[in-house]
Image 1: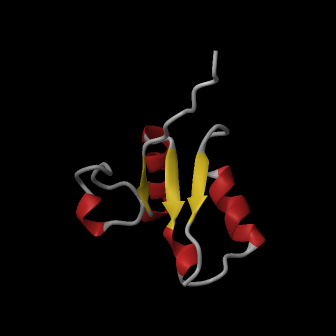
Image 2 (image 1 turned 120 degrees about the vertical axis):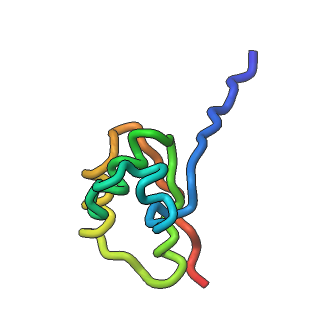
Length: 78
């Protein structure tokens, strides 16, 4: 039997003002939005990589803020 793929549901980016107080709980610090979103989704596209190269330290910080089985999708630069 063929192995089936896994579908991940996510969003493009995690900083959205209209989501504060709706998806993100009221009062959640902006610095915790990635952590919160990653607990409710299985993947997030890193939108910032489209605009500039991110540092290894930034990638490490994001990885530390998310669950071990979480997957990032990196958007290609323009």
